[in-house]
Amino acid sequence: MGILYLVSTPIGNLEDITLRALRVLREVSLIAAEDTRHTQRLLRHYDLHTPCIAYHEHNKLARLDEVLTALAQSDVAVVSDAGTPTISDPGAELVRACIAAGFAVTAIPGPSAPIAALIVSGLPTDKFCYTGFLPRRSIERRALLAELSALTVTLVCFEAPHRLQDSLSDVLETLGDRPLAVVKDITKRYERVWRGTVSTALAHFTVHPPRGEFTLVLAGAAPANQQKRHHHRILAPTATPNHPDTALIAARLQERRAQGERGSVAARNVARELGLQKSIVYHIWLELFADTETGAERDGT
Image (cartoon, rainbow, N blue to C red; front, side):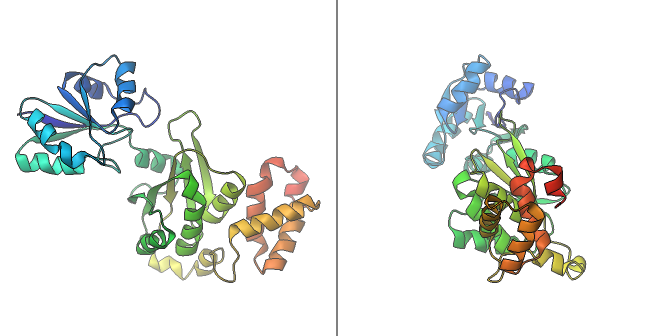
């Protein structure tokens, strides 16, 4: 009887693969790949010639018998397009079927986008909750966020670029203005890590339309014994009927800047106009225009 190997593959940089993973991919009789075209690029890069079959979300149940038949004769490897199989990728059903059939299942550890984003975020890593991709629809997204709102552990999730701003708005409204890191294209050429708060992230990506693959790493809720102490600080920036969304604040600031107002003056005027704390508005100003300000403008002189 063969062994089912769950092989982690690079999430961007092709050098991020272990020697053991390369040996296993070379020695197994078959590779079940999420996308054979994608996997063939990796195999060609390392001069590997193992046969591949497609094993993805739409055919995974139909392929089960074929993979189990192959396992009866020899070892089989499972790979996803990037990262670790079964983590927001196909493979979980196959693992359960192999266990039920008595086959050995083992992992070849390696790259994982949630872990990579978590460790560069600067947020606590001792306890965390990974939720995969956030739901596409706002009502379902907010429902999930509400379920997670009381967790004090760091939250990690994926999001598509065309939904990033909507999701950040839902996070702001549901969880409040927490610290977060937005990790773009981890390990790839244009990798970026944006760190700040939810409101300033929303302001940033309103001005700089998101492109690429994103992982969000959010601070957990404050422990119960700290919530009362920090109640005002936590709730002040949250989107409510009396607290305009960050996109509106950003638009007002851009108008004021176009009229020649400096940061401190513009923040004071917009804060007065919208009934907000000046510090909140000025934080958004710095996110929008810090790269173009002079030292005097930053000091409000």
